[in-house]
Structures are given as C-alpha cells and as structure tokens.
Amino acid sequence: MEILSGERSSLALVCGLALALALLFLNPFIGHWDSYDYMKYILTGQRTSLMLGRPYFILYNYGLVSIGSFVGLKAAHAYLLVKFAVVLLSAVASGAIYLVFRELVSRRPALIGAILSTASPVYAVYSGMVMTEIPMLAVTYLGLWLYLIGLRRAGWSALLVGSACIGFAIGVREQAVFATPFLLLFPLIRRNASWRAIILSWIVGAAICCAGPLYLLVTDPGYWPTIKKWLWFMGAEKKRHPIDWTNIVIWAKWVVANQPLGAFLFGFGLVHLIRERRQLPLALGFVALQLGLIASLAGYQDLLYSPRYLMIAIPGVALAAALPIDRWLERSARPKLVLGVLGGMLAAVLITSFVVTLPYRPVFSKARTYHERIGTLGPRSVFIVGQYCPYIGYLKAVGYPQSWDVVCAGWTWPREKLAGVIDGHLASGQSVYIDLDPHLWYGPRLQQDLGYFTRIAPRYHLEPLGGTLYRIRTKAHRRADRTP
Image (cartoon, rainbow, N blue to C red; front, side, top):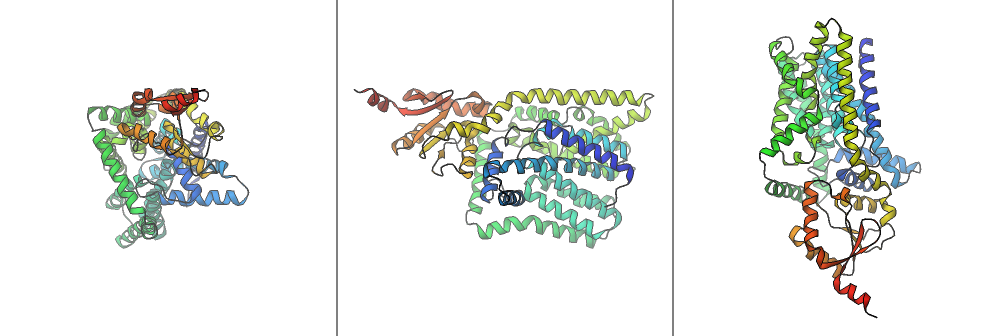
C-alpha cells in the first residue's frame, strides 16, 4: 500500500515508541494467569477453554513454536518466541492505529492520537507478555485500515482482506467482534466502493471468523461442552459478584489507567467532533461507537479484575483527546512548549506506571525458577498455589509429571468443600502442598479464596519445606510420625 514519504516518519515514530515501551515493561517470564494457560495450549496444539477457544491465536503461535522446535528450541524456552512475537505485534498495532486515524483526521491529530494510544500504561504492560489483547488489536486495526482504503479507492482486494483480518482477529480474541459495527458504519458515511463488493467482504470476514469454531465443533467432541461450561462459570461469577456501584468506580479507574491523559481531554474532543461533524464524520462515528462500547463494558463483571478488557475501545478515547491538543498546538505562540509539557506529562505517567507495576514483578520473576522448587516433588503431588494454578499445567506441558494435579483458586475453587477435596487427595495417597506466599494470593478475590483454607488449617499439620511452601498432612499422620 502506498504511504506518502511524509507519513513514514510518523509511522516510524509510533512503531518505535511501541517497541521501546514493550521492552521497558517486558514481563520477566511469560505473564500472568491466562498466559500460562495459553502457553500450555500452544505447546500441546489444543484450543483454549475460554469462550470460542481462541483458535487462531493458538494456530499461528503453534506454528511459531513448531518452527522453534525444528531448529532445536526447547519447549521450556518456547515462550520467548511467543512473547517477542507479541512485542513485535505491539508495533504493528500502533502503526495500524495511526493509519486508521490517518483515514479519519489529518496527520498531526492522527499522530497525537496514536502516541496517546501507544503510551497507554495498560497497552505497554500487555505488549510484553503472552496474551491475546495486542495481537487482536494489531489484526483488527490492520483490517480496519485496509477496509477504509478499499472504501476510499473502491478496491475490492483491500475490502476483502480488511474484512478477513477482522474475522481472523475474532478468532484471536473474541472482543474483536466489537469492530464489526464499523464495517457497516464506515460505508454509510463514505463510500466509493459498490455495495456488492462491501457485502462480499462481509461474507468473507464471516467465513474466516466461523471457520475455526466450526472446525472445532465438528472435530472436537468436547468443544461444545466446554463452551457451555464457560458460560455456566460466567453466570456463576455474576451471581457471586453482582454488579453494583463499585463496578462504576472500578470502570472509571480502568478508563483512566488505560488513558490517563486522554480520559481528561476526551470531553473536549467530543465537543469538537460534534461541532465539526460535517468535516469529520468518520472520526465522529468512530469515537461515538467506541464511547458506546466503553459504556457497555461498565457492566462486565470481570472488569473488576483487570483494565485490559477496555483496550479494544481505548483508541477512540485517544483520538478524541488528540483533537483539543492539536488545536492548542495550532493556536499556541509556543507550540514547542506545549509539546514539551505534554511529553513530560506522558513520561511522568509512564514512569509512575512502571513504579506501580514493580510490586507485581516478584510473582512473575519467581515463576521463572519456581519449577526448581517443586520439580523434585513426587509424581503424585497436588498443588494449591493461588495465582500459579495454571502454571502447573504449563509445567506439565514442558515435561513435568502428567500425574501432577492442582486445586485451582478462582472459578473452580471448592470453597466450603475445600476440606473434603484435600482429604480426598490425602486418602488416595497423594501428597498435597500449599504455597502461602502473599504474592500468590494477592487481591481481594484470591484473599477470599485463601480465607477458606485459613479456616480449616487447624485440622491439618503443615510441614514446612522451606520458605512459604508447606506439605499438608493429617494430624493423625503427624502423631504416627512421633510414635517411637
């Protein structure tokens, strides 16, 4: 695709910033909870148990690690390929966001908006770990850009590939489905292509989107039961944590976490877009749909635990915030001073964000060598390790005993039945271990789960194995050990 020479420097700046921030915030190991599950499924070539299975995320990463294995890369190091692929895709995503913005507004606000999107603390953090958000954004915005190019130039190929990218993005992470309204909105506002070409592109995108799930539905007998199980857990989670006013507070906090500067300038930009709706109809439509999406996510229960669920809509906030900044630059007698102040504010936000993430890094760093700590335990071991629950599954995928088991915190935590679960494992001759490291039980949800164990702990003898790791034994077993 043609990119004018004047655009190259802007594109290079945005992509370079994305790479720099991804490396600055690079996760010490694989990532967090879902990251270990993703690596387990990638290494074993299986679809995930989340929503529709994320088949395309697993597919292309399975290809990567297969190539790595072919050239001698050990399974335990395969995560490096996947993680640095995400790092590179963060630059692709930022560049694609800039190119989409460039189709909606002039060059300077497009560049400012792309910089605000890239300099998001949440975006930077997730650019350096094995997760689906950044790959989804990369393919989604690449698809939207090609789609806009096709509408402007009446190009069949760009329309088809653009819609196909969005269909593929949904298979990477289902949240990309929120980009599909743009496929209808954009041609209603600006269209040089025929409706025949547009509708054909929708059919192609839908076919790409559905191909993966349909293949799994036909070939995997456990696929549909897994989806039903996931839906049941989501319903149970909603009942366990009903939505109330605290959701709104957390939602607002996460909007600011995603766009600390943009969140406060968004209102000014929206007013500007409404006033300039005749000159900027595409930009107004884009921002309005993104605003609606952000508002709808306020009622999503998992938003309590992570700001990443808002990432799909945050570029809309960034674009709106870029417009008042552009006007200030245009009207200011000292534009360099304005840029310096804004740059300083962004730098302060990122530095603060990096400092805020430091307390979380020990749990990631510890995971890198945690296998050395538990690797010598017997093949009939059962682990209760809080945040490391999926880590045990990952270790099994890289060669540790397949007979290892885990009592997972979170959705499947047995709560009041925990004592019965532990007793059942002990009665079957398995060894049960618990790690009470506070980092592994961080946050109100995991603290609540740990509370169930704290209440039943006096029933057992906790044999210290060094540090925060204990073997859970029955009191009777301890008395037997003391008998001469």
